[in-house]
Length: 66
Image 1 (cartoon, rainbow, N blue to C red):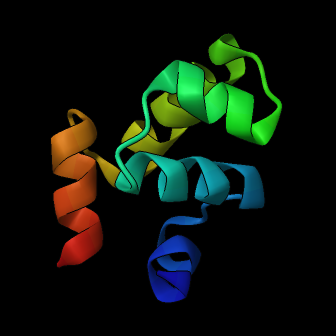
Image 2: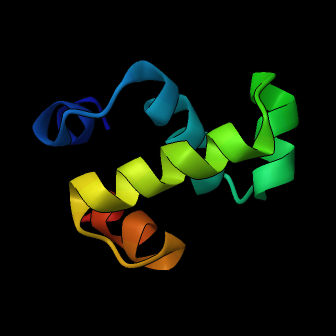
C-alpha cells in the first residue's frame, strides 16, 4: 500500500480513508472513525477516484489489490 500511495500522490488523510474503505466501512462509519464530516470523507473519496482514475469504490479496491 505505501508504494500505491506514493505512486498516486495520496495524502495521509486520503490513505486513512482508503484503509477504512478497504475494510468495508461506509462513508458515515469512516467519518466517525476518523473524526471527520461525511462531506470531507466524500471529498477524500472523490480525490482518490480522480487521482487513480477509478470510477467507483469497487474499481478503487481492485486497483489497490493489483
